[in-house]
Image (cartoon, rainbow, N blue to C red; front, side, top):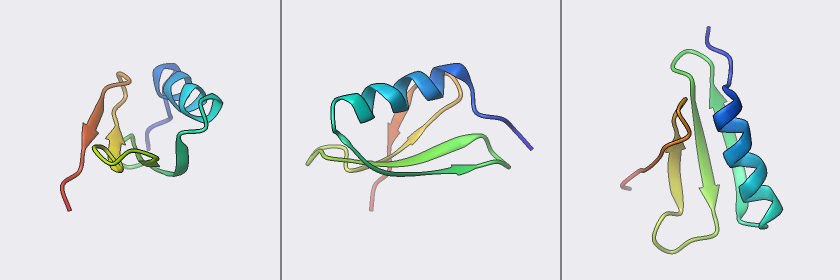
Length: 58
């Protein structure tokens, strides 16, 4: 079981402050957040432990 990192929380807080974050879920087994943001280019993505955001293709 992995705990969220400070980098992940910083990114989530920034997205919330800018009113871009719609929803998020954390997967404790792999240590990733799955996020939905207001963006036509990056609507659904993963937020890695190092704070890097990766697009999820649907």
